[in-house]
Image (tube, rainbow, N blue to C red; front, top):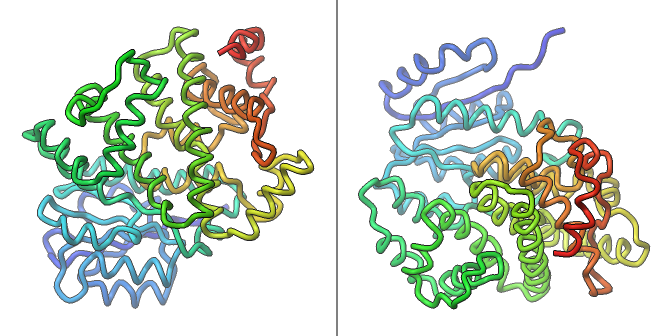
Length: 396
């Protein structure tokens, strides 16, 4: 049986670059159908003639630049994954493309990085199976984008000569971000025993990689501060996510987990329910009513989301984070935190901790309108030989 091959279009005004891409990707001809064009206008004409799964555009092109092209693609072909190649000098154009671009790739782009990014987009689609997450996302008028401050820090970190003080200065320019970063570094998760009040010290304590991820977390939540209804939901999710992070960290520590897992679990915990916020923003009436019915009747939120929207908040959140290029462990954790038994990796780790901590935090909630699963996957815990450990974790 013949399988449908993925379609990719590459857009760059420099013939030498297009030739290089063709040579670089020659080995993928059996799995991808690829077109190479030299301008945005021609790319849009071809996209009208036949659908493409991915568009990869250079940022700096005459006539229609990459930012302008991807804005049109977002509007007219919302199910197409949008990637952009940008250099360090493209900062202003990068800011113009926020909201229309799923991921930014640095120029010059390593072949392995480009291939893995495209492969990840396809694997995300395959992993979602019969989910209608693509249809849901294409209906959304407000799809969150990679935050501006996050992009600025990423650009800085591309430069090996970047000093910590330069990153601190970027953060200090945003008062709200400064407050959120200090709030996170002073949370119970880190348990430093003393209050950190200075951005430089916070940056030093966190390290560059964790800092970058926490900027993404903090800025994601801050995108919705201007809407009172959404801000209330964001505040609730922020508090719930912090509680999940604290419990999950203690679970990992009790089982002797690695430092890497303990850092990854904070980001996973803070973002595990971001799909709820995205659905609230885009479908306020429908999703609000669904949450009310869920809280009143005690029904499964996941089942109700699947029935009404065709996709769950976990699928929506993991899909977008996957396209943004977050660590696969975090993306998989968010996708499977309600159904860990479907994971291909049957090992104790971040997914185990988030699954258990989320259920425990939900069970402890005293809010009558809070809707979250309290159910643990017995089959998954039995597979890992951890059923008896649940009673210990419940005390955290």
